[in-house]
Image (cartoon, rainbow, N blue to C red; front, side):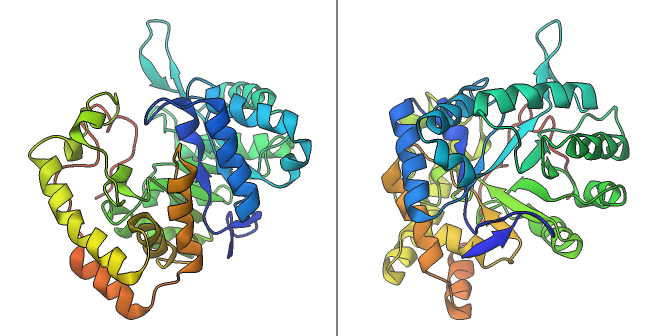
Length: 331
């Protein structure tokens, strides 16, 4: 199953891999585990890799780069996306920079870490509210003309911003959290991407473990900096979310597919432009996600999924107040 990274973009596997997990984000990992995931991607025909300069402060990109150094032929097998814009000011505060000078300088570092001369897709990871998106898009189009990237995109932007950017140049992809537990993209982003020929790259497709057969325990959540303050993983929301997703796990078992496979299969059914990028440290769990590629869902099955997890079922917001700094809210 193949899809495209935008109207005229590279052809890729319909499901990709999100390499944030190469950086200890959801728990300790090592390079051997990361490289085992890359081996599995090649064996199973998964061609799209998504990373960023801030994932482990370059660690994710470095792991991919060292893999390429050991397997030079793999450079031509993968279609790579990376991101920039999240940085620190002189006082150490997190800030977002969208100016071309900063983005291109960070891109150069990413290319060096990855050991490649070009990436297929370069995202602005977070928007700088002080710059118009038209100006940012002009800078990205100039970077494309250098040959260092084939196309560009944005992460976590509103449909209105996508329309404004698209009037300057084609936006190949928008990355957004999208899953059965986060349905906000259906309030305009899914539709706008389809209309403009923009790929919608869906991160956290299994709801940060809630949509799997083995969701993270509260004890595991407590040691993860990102999830510990996340409203969906704080009681009483956590317990309520586990209870709601128990029915989803039961449905997946009845359908003969893992919960993670069913969650990704549901996403694949939301449009030919939707590309899930599950991320995991485990080849076994990644294999569960890949079941989606072999199990297209019928209309009856999609209705059954919607019946057990209707839109709006999740308890708690997807981000804490601090985590909401950066993503554009639009609904």
